Image (cartoon, rainbow, N blue to C red; front, top):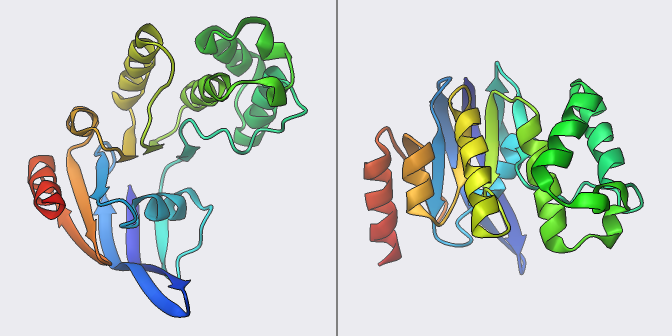
Amino acid sequence: MIRFENISKGFWIKGEYTPVIRNLNLTLPSNRSLALLGRNGAGKSTLLSIVAGTLRPDSGKIYSDGSISFTVGYAGSFHGDMTGAQNTRFVARIYGVDSDELTAFVEDFAEIGKHFHMPVRTYSSGMKARLAFGVSMGIPFDTYLIDEATATGDARFRAKSKEVFKQRMAQSSAIMVSHSMTDIRAFCDTGIVLNKGQIEVFDDIEDAIKRHEEILL
């Protein structure tokens, strides 16, 4: 369960305060997944960052009775001078999971060969994304945070990644930002539409998608 209580957030732009989230009150039950929909710049990634704990709201609090992931596929926290294996073991220690098991899973999943034992600063953006997605999927969370991409690479690797993600979703929830309504329909059953600082909550994902598409017209 994740509960939002009076969450508000805005930013100062050229001396003017611009709200992007106003007084969000919502309880997301366990085993339900939430889509965050809206135009570019509406505040979707901002809200996701607040849930992840990397951004503070201006007011309000978030409560959860389960574990919440870092943003799936986010590679920005990897240390460039450490190898992929070393970064993986470091994350395992932070989240209290078996480092040998996570390292074995990520090495097999990411398919980056010898680069797994080389410094991350030598990686291409694609290799970093594979590593990050593997680390995300290798740790069991009650709720996964997804911002746009659920995978990278060729069609075969993307298919494999979506299959692993689907397996995780069988026992977990997600809060997802995506421009792909196919992914939204596949993984989410309820939705929030953000529009000019206002928030509309929909219990049915199809109603949320319909409202989102109306705003884009």
